[in-house]
Amino acid sequence: MVAAPFRFRHRVTYAECTVGNHVYYARYLDILEQARGEFFRAAGVPLAELQAQDVIFPVIEAHLHYEAAARYDDELIIEIVVTELDRLKITFAYGVSNARNQIILTGRTRHVCANSEEKPKRMPPEVCHRLQAAFASPAPTATAPPTAPLARRVPKLPC
Image (cartoon, rainbow, N blue to C red; front, side, top):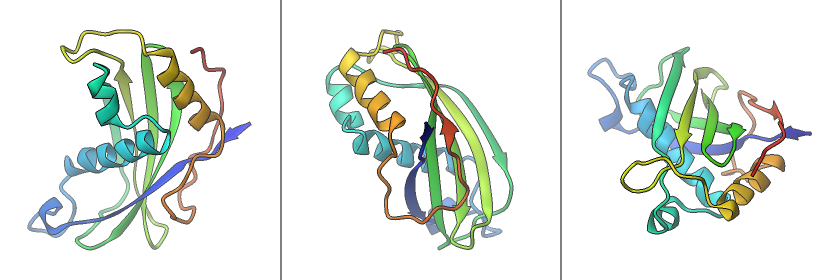
């Protein structure tokens, strides 16, 4: 079985760009966070609802590889797949491309399940199962065409 990537569209704002009219490198983390929030919402577990249940997912590791520059007003397509999921951790892989199918960035972030004091805790089983269900079947899309495929083999996911 192959997991389909979740797709999210983002229009580059002027505030995200440098004087040289390219997206400032650290802004990609904000863009990925926005896309990740939409992934959780589409999986049926909005981050605000999780936070109200004292469940958060702080980033514990981030790797980004820059391929090309994105510029003001570019439309970016962010593809996300879950590559690791258990009751304590979740890892996402990302592919960011522009509307011309040019790969802009690839990367991954690793998160730990924690409480609001950032103490690690086991992910509630219902959250893990919802994420697992969203991961194991073709993910909903934000009406973006396929660009930089990130499909991964679905590993066994212990929840």
